[in-house]
Length: 459
Ligand code: SAH
Image (cartoon, rainbow, N blue to C red; front, side, top):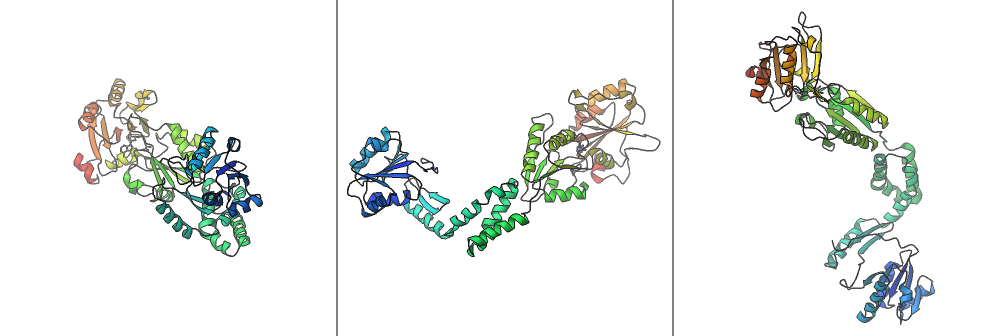
C-alpha cells in the first residue's frame, strides 16, 4: 500500500488550489463539501469559480499562487492543467511544508484524492493507487446503488442518540445499533425523520436485550461427556465464550455452540502456561462485554482447581459468578475399578491429596496415611511417586499396600495399572502414561464382571 487512506479534518483549515479553470472546477466541487477555507489562485476564472467567489464560498485571487498564499495551508492542489504552472505551485507548497497534489500526475503528488461515495457522514473512499480508475469507478457505481441515498440522514439521526445509548454495555450497544440500522431504522425512516426518532425512543424505552456478563465456573468432569451435569451441558450450549483448561476433552468442547469463542488456557505438566492473572483478565474482559462466560475446568472445579484465585478476581472486579460442580477424577477412577472410596470396615474417611503443590512435593500427615486401610485419591502424583512411597514406608506403611493408578479415567483410552506401594514408581515408569493419572492408595481393582471392558483388559 503506497498510499495510506486517512480522513482529514479540514474544519477551519486552508486549502490552496492553483488554477481557476475547468480542471480546478472538478476538484473544487468536492472540496466545497468540506468545511475548509478555500483559496483559489488563477487567471481567467471559469464562470463557476467566479460564482463561488461572489457567494463567498471561496477566496479568489486573480494571479499565480505565491508563497504567502500557501503559508499555513494544509493542502495545495496544482489544478492548472499546465505542467509548468502546476510545478511551480508544487514547489511553493513543498517549500512551506504543505502536502501537494498535482491533478492527474501521480508521480509528482504527495497524496491522491480517492473516488468517493458520499453519504455524509458516511463516506466511502476507493483507491487503486492510480492503476485502475475504471475499477474504482465500477466499485463506486455499485456502492452508489447499494447504499440508500438518505443513509447519511439516518446516521445523523442515530448520531443524535449516541449519548443516551452510550449508557449500555458495549455488547448491548452493538446489538442496539445493528438492530436500528439494519432492521427497524430504514423502515421507520421511510416514513420520515420523526418516525425514525420515534423508533429510537421506543427501542430505548423497551430496551434491547441488555445482558449482564456472568461467569460460570463449571466442572467438566473427568472426560466422558456423559459424566457432565445437565447444568454444565446447558451452560456450555448457551455460552458466548468458553475458557477451558487443557484437561477438558474435545467431545465436551464440541457441545459449545459453533458461534462461541472457545479459548484454551491450559498448562501442560510443568510447561509454560497462561498466568493466572491473564486468565482472570480474560474472564473479566469478556464478562464486562456482556458475554456469558463458561470457565470450564476438568473434574470438579473445587478440587485442586485453583478456583479461589479466580473467584476472588471476579468478585473484586464486580463480575457475578457461580460454581457448577462436576465429577472429580477420584470418583471416576475409583468407579472404573469397581470400588468405592469409602468402605465399611476399611476406612471411615478418604483423603484427596495432591502430589505436588506450589512448594514442590506436597507434605502430608504421613503417619495416618500409612495406617492399614487408609484410602487416598492422589492427584498429580506421578512425578511424586517415589517421594510418596518413601514417606509412607518410612512411617510404617506395608510395602504390599495396594495402589491403583488410573490413567484417563472415563475416557476411551482409560488404562488401569494395579500395583503395590513398593512397586509403584517402577510400575508407573513401565507404563509411561501420557494422560492424567489418578493414584488410588489403599484400593485394588475389584476383579468382577462389572469392571468396564477397557479396564478389564488392562488388568
Ligand atoms: N479438578 C480436577 C483435578 C485437577 S488437578 C478434578 O476434580 O478432577 C489435575 C489432576 O487430576 C491430574 O494430574 C490427575 O491426577 C487428575 N485427573 C484429572 N482428570 C483425570 C482423569 N480423567 N483420569 C485420571 N486422573 C485425572
